[in-house]
Length: 171
Image (cartoon, rainbow, N blue to C red; front, side, top):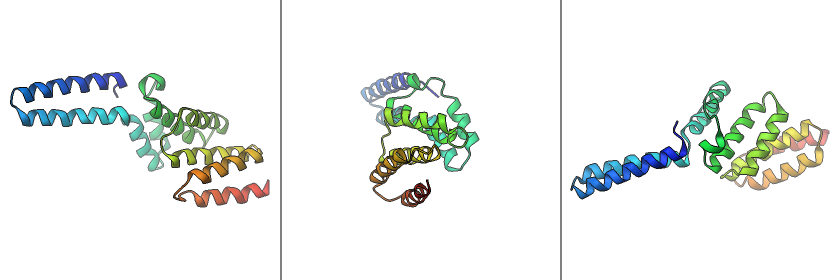
C-alpha cells in the first residue's frame, strides 16, 4: 500500500515518538510504539501486496492474485530488490497458464534479480524447464531440470522433476 520509503519514514517517526515516551517515563506507551514500528519494518521487508497475492495463489485464485499484483504500478521503485524478484516470479506463474513466452521472460527476470529461497529458485527453474520442453529445447530443459533438482534440498518437487524427466524422454 505504501511506498518503501514512506514505510521507512513512518518507522522513523514512530521510533522518535517512542523515545520521547520513554523519556517522559511513559514506558508502556514507548513499548507499544516500538512494537507498532516493528509492523512497518516487517512490511518493508515483506511487501503486503505480495503476501496477499501469495495467499490468493495458494487458494488457486489466479484472478484475485492478478488484481493484487495489478496494484503495484512500478515494481522497481515500490519494492526492494528481492520483492521485485518475487513480483516477476508471481507474474510468471500467472502467465504460465496462458502466455508461455512472456512467462519465460518473467521467470528469467525473477532469477536474474534474485529470489531468496532455494525452493522458489527451484520452482522457477522447473517452470522454465517445462517451458523449454514445450518449445522442444531438450538440452536446455535437461540443464534446468538438473539445476532445479539440485536446489530442491527437501525433495518437495521430486514428483514434478520425475514427471518432466519422463516427458523429456518422449521428445
